[in-house]
Image (cartoon, rainbow, N blue to C red; front, side):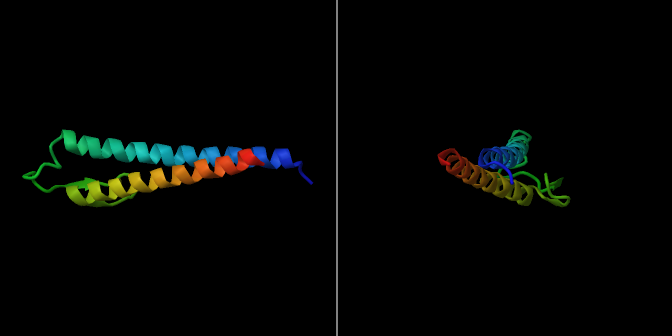
Length: 93
């Protein structure tokens, strides 16, 4: 049987890997939205174009792709807060 400290250390490593994954996906989503904004594709009078959505292999209209990226950004932040809560629980043990 494994030692409790070894289990906690392994749990901590897995938690940090998950947090890193969501941190990267949130960052890429934010950069995607920033890129759309800088290119002027999110302006009120912008011509609607098809763009490839990051993390999802599909093409969508510009505003739809930005909405999907925004949802990924928000959900990634929620997941990171969940991982932080999990880290605090590991720290208490």
